Image (cartoon, rainbow, N blue to C red; front, side):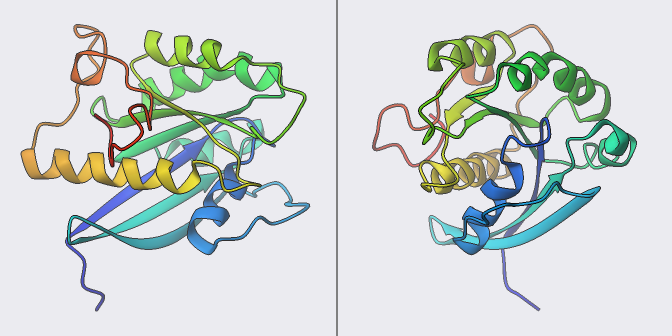
Length: 203
């Protein structure tokens, strides 16, 4: 039996084609799969990481973005410790659908779930969604925010490692975040992942 201190379930949601599978593959396997086909239903991968001397197993669930799989993927929200909501920074429609995904999260996920907004494909030149727009959306909906490139491996490891670090801190303190509308955001403010440069976790 593998030795680990914590087990956390991380679920990725968002429109088809935003790069959810590529983010998971890049983090767990160090690969960028060219010509990746659409996920059918739900797929998952596992990676064990070490933070502050503690082994943490991340069970990362990659859900299909297509409408016809929505009833399947909704059942995976309930036990998630963290939800990554991804969009494609080169595709306005994927950003416009974020409120619909948030409604599903609020309906099916725990109110204590850690929520992270990810703008993917920063390697592309044809950006349609400015960084500030993503930051503003995250701030209004009590989410962390980061932009990534699965292709270039930019911020991908940071995304998952900082989620793991934040979940470990919550598990140790038992002070899980509450998104009840009474506080502006986690820790009283919206945090951009990696803001501050040297920080190893959300802070």
